[in-house]
Image (cartoon, rainbow, N blue to C red; front, side):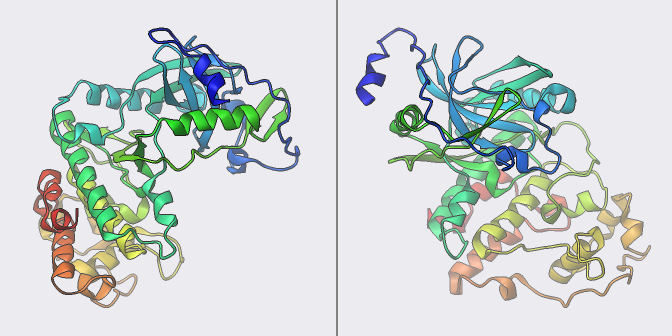
Length: 409
């Protein structure tokens, strides 16, 4: 099979499309839900009816499914003109996405127009192309990216203790802070949604793509055939011999940093205090968000949960109470700037006693994996990010050179 693939390429010419005609695929029962069908609000007509082997835009041939989400599916494709493999992210039809698709494309255009010399440029996922695909129920936006391997979250789950080893965490953080410095200073972009599944490792081993093709040709992906459309099972890329460095992905929730923001953003447990209080926020929310994510990756548990003792669900008042237990009382200046501060604090800055405050604690009491000077330096780095006052949080540029990161690289 490898010799067949080699015969289909010629130096200096476009690739020839492969023929995916093997009928020996596993047919999944109609009553069994598969992948995107598992989402509670799944509507088949919202998704583009991809067929393995089809060529989009007379250039990108679909090879197989890499993943899926509530708003998109991701596919490995052959770039016939560029003689390379790419990842295609095909969104649900535009009518159900509103302005979000155009917004994400604007963010990528900002990135593309920014300095290529910044050391963080390569730590941000690149957009190679974008186009719209007409479907039976509307138009579908397609973003073309270099293919990546797996996310930091998936990598984390390979470890039975669900914690990143120190050298891996330090390497990931170095890249992440360089990426944020690039976004903040060169692109004027606030990411707002930094989490482990938005940081992915690259691939420096093209053989994994040829292997993927061979597998699809010899053993086609299982699928359901429903009303003339196929729903495919995803296929994993094999472990590459050489991993690439991690890159920051997914700019669907990113916003321009050169305007004032008051909207609610970020995953609940990562929300910065200024977001909860509805105070103006800017680049510093990314720093707080990153600090909370680091704790997840290294300690194996959330730094803040926001779990309300009465409702047993996330509530802002419980989140703020946890912050007070760890960081003490918030500064008056922050409370005065928040439109919702009065819901949680008195005019004197005291927390309203709707629920009891947890017992005061410290990062030293919570940290369980380090000791001695290594622990002190790690917690010193954490404290540079976890301030009530956004102006006191360190910049991404300074954090990229933090002592704990550099000594563990």
